[in-house]
Image (cartoon, rainbow, N blue to C red):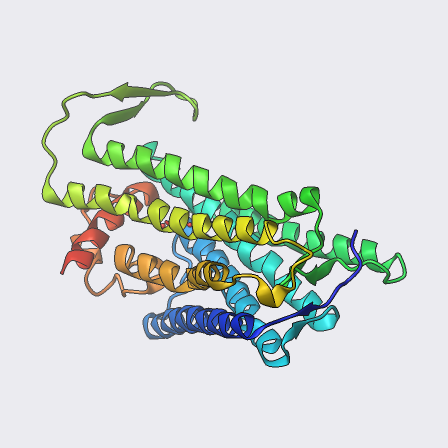
Length: 349
């Protein structure tokens, strides 16, 4: 536990925090504009936007991105006042961090696993939305319980110890390694490693180097074959494979930038005034991470134009889906291929 200590900021800190707030505002604008297009298409087509499992996961991801954007925008107050202080505003920023950064990582992990199962194992998702609804509910329930238990436990000690404190340029969890691991570090690292491993496997599977076929009646019975010299792929399949790598590369870049920022903050000498500590690279990495919403919106709209009715599939894509693609999984895989053609003319982050 930790007593709350105010952080007095210098001019470089103020400028950096203002830039971080603007990055968060830009991400917020992108995500809200995306939601606006989804609502517009739903009204025009008179259909609900949740046509597949991945649609629900993506809504969870972008809802978390809204929290992340607000979290970054709240740094504007610290830039204006020139100091970071404990209190209700600090608690609010810490709560938004929990639902934002952690929620993004958890939703990204869910999307990566779902996409891998659909494409790699040729899984046909059931028509019922119970699975994604349960997963998304658990994500938000986990974060809500983490916040409620943390705040309740610390306030139960008479307010002597704060749960969210200046860290030191903005508000975050008090310095407890175990708490920070289960709050954010665990999920962020799981999302990155899973994204890299699963999408790299999908890359080789789409190119034909890995062949996966059912080997029994049970869901876990599959035969995986490595092919040294696969048949030459068409240009469309090659483009799909390359786009499979966009998600883990973008995600890993943003996360590594944020990890670098963590290391810089951890190495700050507490005996040196905060105004005298170099803030340039901390601000640069944090600005990059504050643009997560921008990156996610661009990736999804460019590579999966049919998600959430974003590109009116009834107008152009429905006619391109083969008649024999009757199952939900087959249609999802077909639409994924069509998305690549649209890009040339399912956090998948």
